[in-house]
Image (cartoon, rainbow, N blue to C red):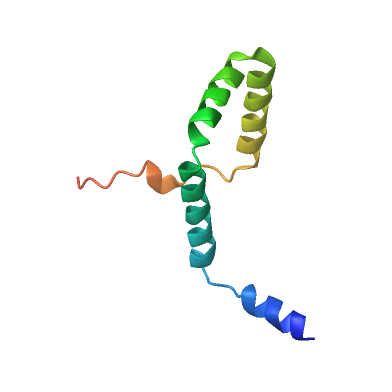
Length: 83
């Protein structure tokens, strides 16, 4: 029973914009950059994009992802100019 209470308190809903998750993500990104692996990963990505098979696989994944997207926010193209 004690573990359940601990899990519930650790998983509390922080509302829109989960600050804990955002902080953990930002910290992990900073650790990755400081590790020195970013340049190597960027070079590998460039090589991957030159491979027809990998590029097609990535393009397919993007297409599938876009199919599941809710669509663009209408506010993005809204004109706020007064007539």
